[in-house]
Structure formats: structure tokens, C-alpha cells
Image: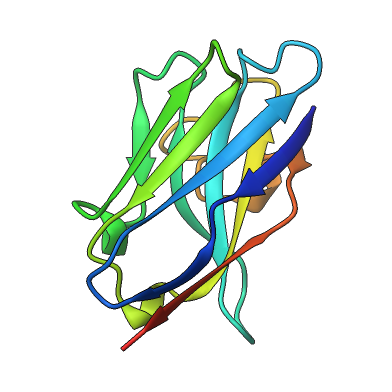
Length: 127
């Protein structure tokens, strides 16, 4: 599966952005999806994930209540709505897929749980 992320940009603190990840390839609508981010000089870290059927979602603690992950399987797209953005949200955001659809609470935060990655999209939040 191929992943294409978009929607990054520059926004002031308190503002909003919506990231999009388009998946293409075989069975791209029945895969679990996630978002990670990597700030300059730091490791890539988990942000949010969603099961293939959209029923279960998972969030990193610092984004709960501000970010919302959703998906439109008819369009093979996963969205990350980011509200109340903070300067510490500045990072390159990556979407990722688990083609085996095995994500659960104990696996979503691990990079090794995902087998496909998109290119990053830059998000910069100014203070």
C-alpha cells in the first residue's frame, strides 16, 4: 500500500490544521492506520491511530481532546483534525499503515507495528 500525506503548514498557536493521508493499493480500505510525528532532533513518536473499521481510536496523551482521527474508507483516506495547536506540536507528521490490521492498545505506539509509511508533512506552530 502506498501512503500520501498532505495538509501540513504554518499556523499560529491556538489554530487548527487538518492532515490527510490517502492510501492506494490492494485492500487499502481494510488496514489500520496511524499518525506519528518527529520533532527536530527527536525520535518519531505516536500521535493517533484508528482501526480499519473506524470503531476504535487511540491517542497519545498530550493530544487527547485536541486531535481527532477519522477515516473515509470509500475514499481510502484517513484524516487528523488538529485543534488548539501548540508550539510543541511542531514536527514532521507521518502516516503509517498496518496492513495486517492487528493494531490494539498494546501495539499502536510501536513503530514496528506498522509496515507502510508515507512521506512526512511539516507542521509548524508559531507562538
